[in-house]
Image: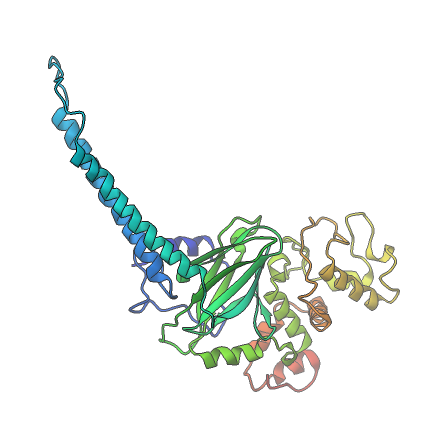
Amino acid sequence: MTDLHTMLLTLAQAPNEPKEGVVAPRNVEGFRPDFWMPPDYANFGSQVDGPFHFITWVCIFFFVGITIALIYFVWKYWKPAGVVEHQDVPSHHTMLEVTWSGIPLIIVIIMFYVGFKGYMDMAVPPANAQQIDVTAWQWQWGFKYPNGAELPELHVPPDEPIRLLMKSKDVLHAFYVPNFRVKQDVVPGRFSMAWFQARHSGTTDQPEAHRLFCAEYCGTDHSNMISWVYVHPTRASYEAWLAKAGDYGQYPPEVAGDLLTQRLGCQTCHSLVKDEIKTGPSFKGVWGRALRGETKFSDGRTLADIPGYGDDPVVRARNYIQESIYDPATRIVFGIAPGMSTFRGQVDEEKLGYIIAYLQWLEDHDGSPHAEWSALPADDKSAYMQKYHGGGGGTN
């Protein structure tokens, strides 16, 4: 049976889709959802689902029992007109009072013990857990892996403990993966921790994708703060992916820039359609306006009016793009509300060059160069190189 919880989340928050080459988790035996809960693909399923169902059925039992008793007593002891109320009624019944106090006390103690044990298991990761650093900001997730690669999706090997060390750059967020039964607040100004051990269904040799949500309201685009957790089928598959994850040099510069702006969440706030405004201005046209010095700011001046960016148009444009990425509050584009976070520390000079190459590419082209590059055979990219660079192709 399709669980109501996952269905509502999917309908309400469906804009993002998993990348190509991965599959949705299979509802096979041992991983099926029930009426209330989504599929269980991590180690905490029984510790969350068991107490949840126990408490639910205890509540149902007492609600039904008390309601039936209430209706029965109303029917049995209602007082017809003219009947004198009987005065000789009991005021105390020790056994009855012990029963209605003792049974709920025992049930609550059981609930507390099971819940506390589950909480402690979730709060203390194994000593051999692999650590991945998590950063949350409006409205994006960032994951830093042991080899230094930084991506907006979480990739993990199967059946191994993963420890997430989390922080927020701005407001309160919450890391929530329903299929893993993991939810943890991510608080600005302090670190928080969550851990899990994900499972792969074993029905495919591709990574399986699980939705990751922000479960605390964090501003205008809170509902779009969605990412994915990819569980690889084997440790070897994960290590092969990790080895290539942070290598942008394998792509042409504009392809690397496109991929970077996707991974950093830039395209969440910046459209690729000319003159279309999301949270920030469209990427298409940014380079051309900066090159001509026509970028207009909130104080009424244009880029050409402001000294310090350089006399050469290309130098001026590059300096402005760099400032916009590292110190976005310095110049606010006309008609745009301030609010962009700095990417200093996440975008080095090499990555900055890739992003600028992508903005330059967008001046004369539409679409995604990364999508076009990825659609070609892995061992022959000559068609792309001939189209955009007038030369032969690479092999990556």
